[in-house]
Image 1 (spheres, rainbow, N blue to C red):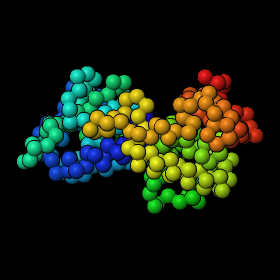
Image 2: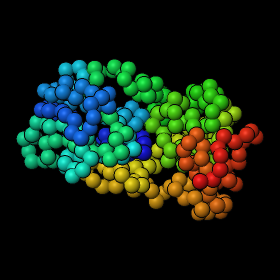
Image 3: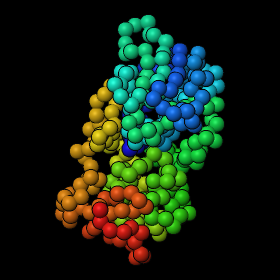
Length: 285
């Protein structure tokens, strides 16, 4: 968290405000030196030429051939308002001719899992997850046969494989649970055990839940905020995630929470039958 809908919402809000602005200064605040905040000084004097997204990463190409990479981690928030606590990095921007938001962008990150760094454009050697991302789930380049072929390459539980970002980019814990419920697939099912029909149903479910969340500006459970400080509205639409002990909205069975690959996982034990193999989780949380 945040996942694709939240990051894309932030991207859409940043784009009209940032593109064309010159960066006067880019610096760490309360953040250690190291690869997560590397190269920021190089951004000074460059203009922001775009605000794009790849999976859960924000990519800001700069005018002198560099790229500002931002990953919100678990608790990162971008805002033109300086936070009182947990400020990790910031951009000082050239003021706009007309009155508008404060001429700065601040990165607040209480749990310190985020990234805010500058690299030569396209050089992602220090970001192996970004370098190895699978295709975008809402893009035209991904089709059902290609997705099925990607799943067929792994024997790991399908949810764990989705979280690894290889078969598709940007899907995290929340939307993996929601999509697997929609497709009636148990999260512990080995990825390669899914038929082409089931793989196609899963891809359709991923696209449905991501699109619906994006229309609601994402899901706020605790920390996620839009650039303007507002929350995402999709939480009320979640069907299984965070609803353990409640009835399944499809069949009425009680939603369970299990541990799978070290991650809390929500499912309906009736709608999502376990695979005919030893389950790779331990016990209910």
